[in-house]
Image 1 (cartoon, rainbow, N blue to C red):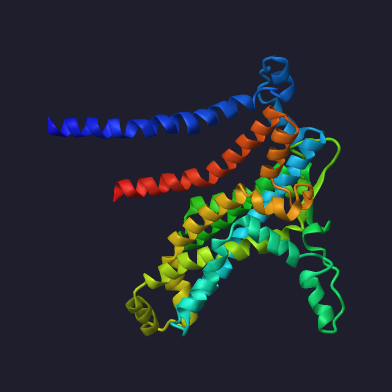
Image 2 (image 1 turned 90 degrees about the vertical axis):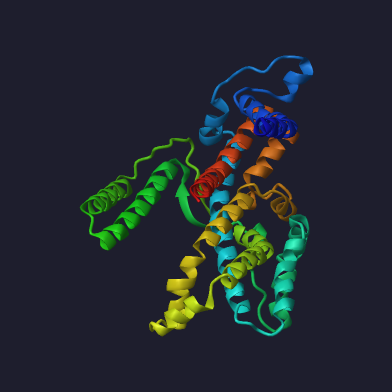
Length: 371
């Protein structure tokens, strides 16, 4: 009887939070999803007309349409992919390096730890303003070489229009398939070398064969007219440096906590077995830090996929070379008053974040239930 009463009390206490969560989170997500499948805009609302249901037209227009809004969205998607990869790599690399250095029991460790963590106390708006000054092509970092008697560099930083790794948007599905098959080949090949499994050998061979066929044929899986060259905009380097400067201290703190949690006896045992200091980190420390690395990748990926304020401050919303989907969604929805298209971009961003977050949460919940 007492247990039943406790359950009822728990449900009653949680009910207000569950109702608010259902209405203001999942309810609004559902409404945004419905709006993304309509042609809702400000003119309809002002004239009292109801929005027309158009299905997935907004989504198809964003990925294959010829309007400038659609071309900008596709540029944003490419920018997001490149920025996310570089941002995560910089934060993980710099954060781990700083954590390893601080783990050497150096003098003044508390001071350096505070200095490295300080950028996290700033907002992305402040970070954007500071780094916009530093990356000013006519001043900032570019002004330092002339002060030392060296020629002034011509690098334009966040306003650079140079592109690397150019490809055609029509071939984006083919490129994604080649990357996926390449990953399958590497993983299957590694497992075959480790376990000598015929199944893995066949899978690796099939992935390599399909990869070669896709590369040779150059088949276009997504047709848009006219052709759209895309690539890595060099201006993104300024954005990566600014964001990495702010978030590297966070990864440093995570790695430092992980390093301090590794018993010194484990390291000593590896040294006794003949491992060098580099081998200790390669075969002992880094594998034990794998869960922290995964957590950092998830969190940093979530930040990069929905980044807005830093990009807005550095680019002003008009610099397409560092543009992101969040900026595009803001202008389309609240400046262009095209609510259906803006909602479609918002749902695509939600799906991108969910692809990163949901598998991680599912793994954590499964691990928690098993333990």
